[in-house]
Image (cartoon, rainbow, N blue to C red; front, side, top):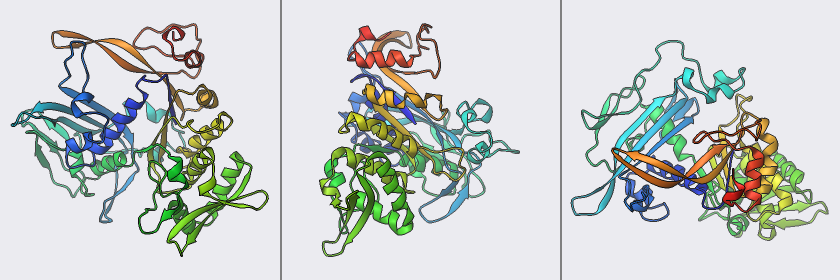
Length: 438
């Protein structure tokens, strides 16, 4: 679980936008289509310099942990040799033949993260770490799973295992990522990276969507980003494991003592599924009349028991619509959603939250002693950027780690600044003014 706190316009949402763009680029057949899902025009998303010009390129690097088994759409399976992967992508804007701005891939790479340089793997419990990152005894891979050949102006995909043969993709105005073109288990590590990025979810729970029953003719059984299909997802969970309803009921009751049980009804006459909650007096209520805060907590309780939810969950300002007295409850539920690495059978789940709530930060500060929890402070800073012989001054976002245990009197030089928790709280409590910063 990662919490990123900071004032408005500090760049917290930009991180989620970047992750969403990467997810779309890994799963669409056209780069422009992925950019259309973003805020603003594609050209507006490239770095703006102080002389009113735009950068020609944008670059992404993401490290990931993927499951050790991968399955393609046709049911073929394979076991991965490496589960820690690093994906790099560089995009470039250019004028096409008819004078319109377009975007192309100019560099793409997928490689393993070598054990000796992997800092993250060191936080795992030693007794279970081999389950998450299997040891490689012989034949360590030296060649990336895909890489850019400058000489050939192409992306090369070497053989991965015994099935897939080497492939070469020319980069002459490439209009999609190479990663997005693989759907077969013949290249298991590329497919695993693609599936991981496809699984990234961005929750923006809407109380109206959470309240509505799920139509059997128009709905699905997976909870959408806004909370649609909550009832159908609960019905699927109930069909697979009836005891899961007991767990969800107990979890909800521990956070909202008014309610003692949760159920879902198959409304055959109206062709829909409806969530029903019972209170301590035995009275029943449908989800249509529940408060926004209760609905948000219920949705997280259901996600907690949903084995279809794996991967990364990004949740923007989870405190919205929740009474301050319930924010600690919300924080605990989000932490429960994350992977317990001491359990070798636990589903891989990660949660990133952004917030400007001092109450939420206070509610999560007790987790700072946990190696699987981290907190960061986002703020805007001035940077000097050198490109060739030219220097630019840009106002950009810096996301700085909040240490677990540090003397707040210690001053760190930029860009290695680290914020104590108290500094972060002071900043937020003073309305995010720069005078309350460092």
